[in-house]
Image (cartoon, one colour):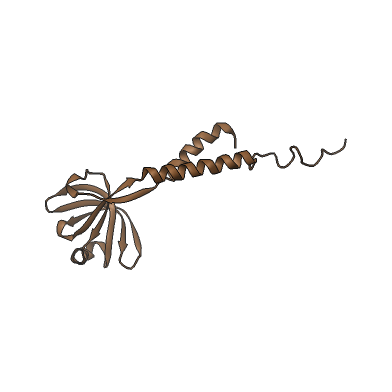
Length: 149
């Protein structure tokens, strides 16, 4: 790989390998557009079964709005108690407050992301220093002699 392409590739790889975590958050402090994971109570899962399906445990998506009666989300994924996951295309679901067990926001975990990015950079630099992928095909020093003329 050429040196001029190395920096942009490393930047892209570091962004792609970022580590995220879900942290508890107060619903009153959440801004619209925030990625949330909402855990439902058993009663909440039962009352929302006609919209979400039976046995829903968590709902992932972006917050659209919140008020005193509940919240509105653009749903991207629904996880069932059985362990199955269903992917959605951003359909809007209104979730009453009595259905909420836990609300978590998705946040970047900076220490883990930096550690993973550093490991990736060291691995790529080691490969570069070892000469792996330099494109010489073994014809450099120590390779077979050139054919006679």
